[in-house]
Image (cartoon, rainbow, N blue to C red):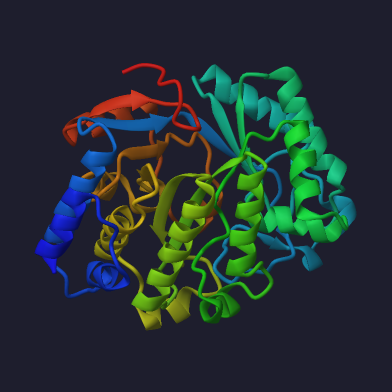
Length: 375
């Protein structure tokens, strides 16, 4: 099978379901798989170059009605008194609900720009107390004061939440957000598309098909988006195959995905912590296998990002030899996976050193991989 896939990589022939199953199988030699993925990565992107971005993840609220069992960040909406839900600072150590004010978000954007950042990732919980004008005002305020910043915001579950709460078609929600300043959409909320898994980990969230449909509608309106996948929920190889092939099919149709990012579920402090420990967590080798397989299966994706913020710098560095061409974002701020115990942090100097030590040339990029800033 290795020789067959090796020939397909060299010839540019698409992998079949059988090929992909071999890639994801635990019996497959991980180093052979990594070699194949790295070869494809070098065919699709400059072999000597690894890109990265300087941006910030701003979570505008931790109040959420979704109740995902894998999330250690959120505070259930039903436990919050709405008149106390507005809290402009994150400094509290108690598990209280908060929503950032527009001015607080603007302060964080300014800090990002002052530290060399050129983009922000804006995401939050599904907070029933916020009017649609809150989201529009946030975008308009950022765009008015910092016109050059790229706003990568509101994952499909948020978009669908807006649509249902405010009785607006998804397209109208997207058009309103674009008019207010939205530039692109993050791939959060995909988790794993298997409905049997989603019903256990996130019964209140959108389905996998709804996630895909929202991305399709966004792509048709000209928005670029990222795609994600989380492993370690007890899913099968078949579940992982289904997820990757559905992404490949949608990319064939729209071409709207800029990059794919995978990571392992972080169970600490979540309702699933003990359950996942009994089933068996996903480890570093599982992450490398999925990332390498994704590089081979997703032949219509240009970029594969490393998820160092969940996997750590050492594994992130190794992942650059398993199909990834991008070291993701410096991420000046991150709250969600940090709540689950993943406390990895870095700065631009360290990030460039890690890329260089791994044998590549670090290149700073913008959000949509355009206009490389400097080598």
